[in-house]
Length: 107
Image (cartoon, rainbow, N blue to C red; front, side, top):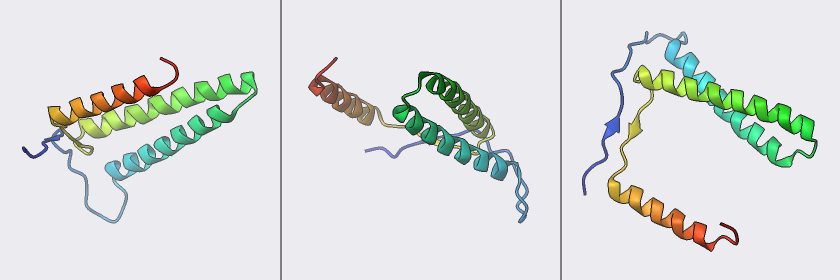
């Protein structure tokens, strides 16, 4: 079995001091946006007022877009890396999802 390969751009250097650098600030913002997106998602699942739901859904989308933009920025600077999934794992996940989907009472 081959070892997973990292998918990553060349890292933009940042100062290594006790002060927060650009990478630290963006990492903090990304974590906050991820938390906010998860919280808005939970709130949307529990809302009964349609007007409030629509307002929060718009804010959720804006927050999700901000999270994606921060992720893209970090990836471009090489501060966020991914592991390439072997094709076999992708196929296994697809088969598992497909099987679970067929077991649902609706399609």
